[in-house]
Length: 453
Image 1 (cartoon, helix red, strand yellow):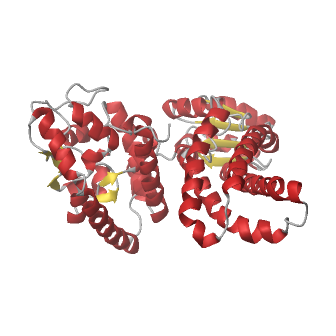
Image 2: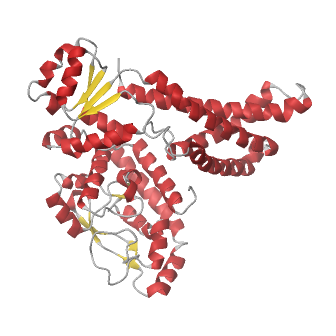
Image 3: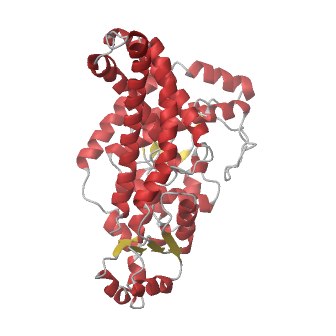
C-alpha cells in the first residue's frame, strides 16, 4: 500500500536518526583515537563517553540539526540531487564548526571538559561520516521506498511544478505524471499501480470515479491532488481554489488562544529588539543623509487586516524622486546606502514599532501598498483573502519563494505565486510554523550578507 504522507515522514525520520547516529559515532571515534589508542583502556571508559562528553556534545548535535534543517537537508524533495553534496555539506559544516567552538569556549566551565584536540578530531570525523551517510542514503532509501507506482493527474500548471521537482529526485522513481486521465484509467484496469493522486472535481467528472471503483478493491489508494500538492510544496494550488475551498479551509474555528499569545509575543519581541535596534539608528541616519541628504524615513500607506489602512515605517532606500512601479532586479531607483540596508534588512527595523502599535505582526502576509492592492484585487481572484489576518514583518512567502528573499513580487504572476504561499500560511498558521518562519528569516538574512554562503 502506498502512503505518500507516511513515506515522506519516514524518510525525514530516517535521515534525522542517521545524522544523530553519525554525530555520536564521530564523537566515539574521536575519543577512542584521543585516549584509547595512545593510553590504553586505563583512560577509556563509558563514563568518559556517556557522561563527560556525550551530554555537552548532545546540545551541539541539536544546534547542528537545526542548521541542517535551515539549509534544507530535511526536505525530501531536494535531498540527494544537490549539484555538489560535498560542497553543500562543507558550507553547513563550517557554520556548525563555528557554533561548536563558540559553544565550548563560552560554556566550557559548566561542563568541566577540555575538548581542544577532541573537538578538532570530532569536526573532521563528523564531516566525513555525514558525507558518507548522506551519499549512501540516496541509494538505500530509494531501494527501500521506491516500490509501487504512483500516478498523478491534475491541472497543467501544477503538474509542471511536480514534474520538475520529482524529475531530479532519486527517491521517487516510480511516479507517473500525466495530464490525460484516460492513461490512468487504462492502468487502473490492469491494476498496474499502487496509488492515484487526483482532484475531487476530476474524479467526479464524466464518471471517472466509477471507472476507478474496481481498482479500489485491488488495493489502489486514492489521494486528493490539492492535499498532495500542499504537502509537497507547502503552498496552495491556486487553480483549484474556489469559494467552496475557502469556506471549508479558511473559515476555520476560533483560534483565540493562538491569536492572544501571538499578540503578546509580538509586543514583547518588538519592545526588546526595537530597543536594541536603536543602537544602529544614528549610523543608518548618518549614512542616508551623507548619501543624498533626503528624508530619513519612508512612510507609505499599506493595507492591513480587514482592509484597514495604516502608515508603515521604513528607512528610505530609494531616491526621493522614485516613481511607483513594479520592483526590478538591480533596481536603479535604489540608492547605494539603500542596497546595503535592503541586503542586511536594516531598512526594516522601524517596522518593529508597527508591530508594537499592532498594525502588523512579526509573522504574516506582507502588507501591500494601497494603490497596488486595489489593482491586484481586481486582477487576481480571491486576493483579498490575504487581509483576513494581520500582515507581518516577515512571512511564509518571503522565506519559501526564491525571488522574494530581498524584494517584493515584480509581476502579476509572481504575486499569484506569493498568494499561494500566503493562503497556505493562513490555513495552517500555528506557533510551530511561526517559529519556522522566524528561523528561516534569520537564515535568509545571514545568507544574503554572505555568512551562510
